[in-house]
Structures are given as C-alpha cells and as structure tokens.
Length: 299
Image (tube, rainbow, N blue to C red):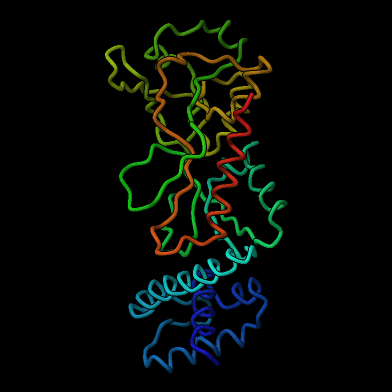
C-alpha cells in the first residue's frame, strides 16, 4: 500500500473527527482506515493519534504531520487538476466553508447553480459562521461576508455588501421615526448575536467618524433570518444584511432608516490560501461565482 493512500486516510479521519465518520464519508470501511493509519504510524515510527474507546485526539507529531500532509496532498491534487484542465477535464472535490446566512439567503442559489453546471465537481459545503483556518482545517476556500483585514489569504470580491436598519411601517408609526441613530437607544431593537456588532450598532457620524449606539430590546437571536422575522412581527428595529432584507423592503413590509449613515466598506469575498498552483476546480468555481453575482446585479 502506497504512502499517499495512507496519508489520505489519516487526513480523512482527522477532518471527519473519527474513523466511523470518515468511513461513511469516503466509502471505505472503518477497519480499513484504522489499518492504513496504523501502518502509517508504523512507517513513521511515531504515534499520530491518541485513541480511546469513545474519542481520539492528535498527538503533537500528529498535528505537525496533518498540517504538512494536507499541504502535500493539496499540491499533488492541484498538479493533477492543472493537467486535467489542459485537456479540458476539470473535476474533483471542493471543500468550501461558507456562512449559514449566505446559504440560507437567495444568493445561496449560486452554489446550487454551480453544482448543476459542473456535475464532475463535488461541492463539499460546510456551513459555519466562524472564520475557519483554511489551511489548518483543510478547506480549499471560503466565502466571507465582512470587511477584510490584512490577511495572508488571497481574496476575490464577489459583490458589495451593506446592512440596513429596518422596521415595519406600523412600528414606525406607533413609536415615531428616530431622527438620529442615537434615538435607537430609547427604542426596542432586535439584536442579531451572529453579527459583528451585537448591541453596539455602528453608524457614520456627521464628521465621517464611526459612532456606536448601544441598543437593547425584547429578543436576541443568532440568526439574521430570525431577526428579520422578529422585525416583520413588529417587535423592534433591526440591522439586517441587505440581501436578507431586500425582498421585504421591495414589498413594503419593511422600511429602512439612516441609509446614508450605514458602514459601506464590507463585501462578499471568495478567499483561498496562496499556492504554487491554484487548483483548476477552485479557479472554475470562483470565476463562476464572480459571473453569477455580476449577472444578478445586471439590470
């Protein structure tokens, strides 16, 4: 049995966090994966996994080996992709991290459309609102909705992104429209604990500097979809992603406030690590998303 097969088995077990889960995912038996990992340890002369009856953990040597082995396998797969691309045959598996909000919103259709257009590429989507470590956790790329800080990752902008302060027309009529962002401190607000700002909402001040307004209200929830539902129920004012709020705003069920005072420096990005060879499957995927969002914005 060759070393690459054992390496892939070890990586699959670590990424799936167990032999049984890895076996189900890649279609191999648990006993076979255990055999491959044991043979790899014997060949290396080092213990990579601490095993118990219920769980396992990586040893220090295991952590080091997993990181380097993942990089090697990615380079090998990238090289194979480059050769396939030259013959017009792009296929493989893309391991993607994306926020739940992205997949649950209408723009999540972009992932479905890609899978339909490229049946030879398996799209392995992991929905997680945290910023995963792409290299450490073995992801090919991630979609991030944020204002990107300095990073070692390559970022390609897919679309602009903004947030909206929203409320129902009935609530605004009942409580009165706030004249300044600071007035929200005395009004019921819906807190999306999944957002960056929690209960301190940022606005552009009159001098261009950012000012924050402390808010509170009857409901706190870690989902912009639930926050939108609460806003539609008239429970308070909410900050919502533009792509979540847009259908309700267009239908007149929600009204926006302070549009000219909201931060506008964020975007939707595809990010991926620096590599000697960018896998063809990743390039095809990113190019597809760029065109998909461009078509969505076209009049």
